[in-house]
Length: 67
Image 1 (cartoon, rainbow, N blue to C red):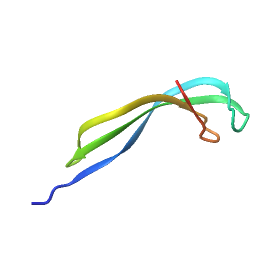
Image 2 (image 1 turned 60 degrees about the horizontal axis):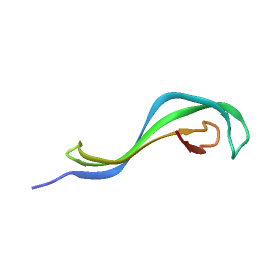
Image 3 (image 1 turned 90 degrees about the vertical axis):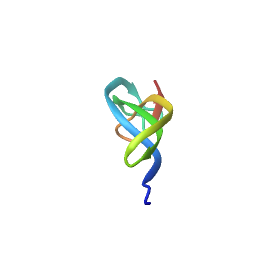
């Protein structure tokens, strides 16, 4: 029998975040609100998700700040 399984980190964009100045690139822009979690799948069906967190990302340089 052939069993397909996977493990990885998934990110999903939730929409626009706050307008703030980035500590890394020093640009003032609107950041993107993101959700990230780790998951285990079997036959492309997610069976378990853990380490869920929400954060905001600078769209210029990619710096992240917990939301």
